[in-house]
Image (cartoon, rainbow, N blue to C red; front, side, top):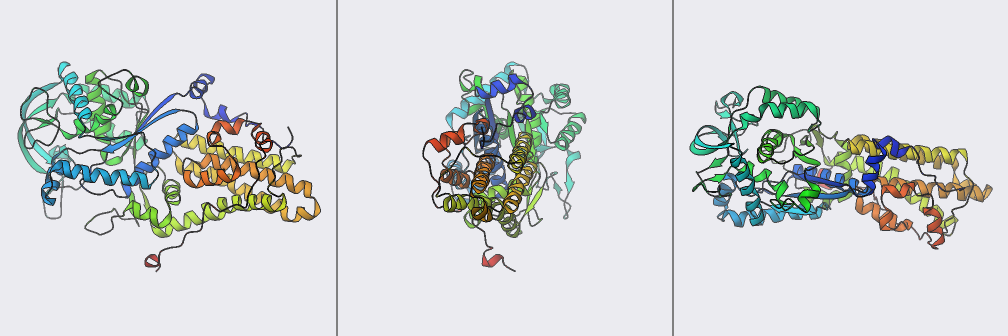
Length: 545
């Protein structure tokens, strides 16, 4: 049909491995994604926000691809750190956990994190799930009582071998992360981690279980060096989940914490959500806790006779102007404050566009403003505003679906198709920066098309051609908006509202429907005077040199 954007016939072939995989997707194939649960002995920082935003974008992207998505986050509220922090501030551990958990929920609300489940490890259902996992490991003969003597980092909630320690400037022994360690002696239950060494190495070598490759290589070397059995209970404090049948013992906080991924699905009931969504498709975590997720967690699950998650991805750190954030340096950033200053969507876009996901990256107020203004405000925002404004002024806001397409129009559609395909391919691989780069190339193609076609001149010389150009732009803007919506959902929804795109059509499948413009025109929808959705940002006065 003249004027209507034909479905990109090759798009799904580039993205799907087979027709069968695409059919499952269309029927709502389940997809389960989790963040790490945050340790709430302090308020959220930018690293928590980065992980939550990335997970939210993945979840929204999968929903746009017609997956049935389950997205879980939460707080990890047991362990010695919580006991010590509560004592310092004059609260009980539960009072502290409840207060601090609220800050993490507020962060999610402020950053538009659309999770399905927010789990707290102090919930009774989580105690039940953790104790069931323990019983299954015990029934498999993988738990035994003995005496632990060794180095422990309270801050990391982790045990370390002597060979892993480093020496600080004052000669004190430190963990590999630079945190203090203390010599610990106590009766403890041990998990036969060494028993699973070969199975873990086979897992790393035969699948994409652990990404990126640098993390997989690091963990494989660690396991190849030999695994020792793991202490999995504590008796020096009681703020934790009780070990079944063992008076005075509480579970090692990581046994407790890792089980949260099952708790939120209703485990130990293995029907319903557990049957539908487990094993998890993706555990998204920081690189500093890869060992717990890629060594301990799969070994616990193997012992308990449960399936292994499909993938663990350890992302990098965000650095503040190139420096790691630290309370002592006074450079810890409040993510809610950043969102209030620069806007939620510009912040979300910047964090995924600026940093190659999986690597460390740096941010600064100047970088946020520069990136958001150049790409969201000046390039895409201006494109959308100009296109809708010209339709409003020059066509009285009336849309048309039947008009001749020139070679230039067809070329623009091809460029937009290519950009969206690049975004989808990259997002599927968690390469967000690459995907947004492909999307921006399509935006640049649209802006070049506007300059070359000059619809403001065509208004006087060839009004029929002007209408074709403006409707070509209208379709291109709609497609580009739908593609980037997982990253900047609030702004894009405001734009698509102005364009008359129904909420249920803001998904990738709608890009393959050749009748959408015909239907929109038939509905009588007209463009009103548009309102820009990506205003230019300014640096706060205190940030201006």
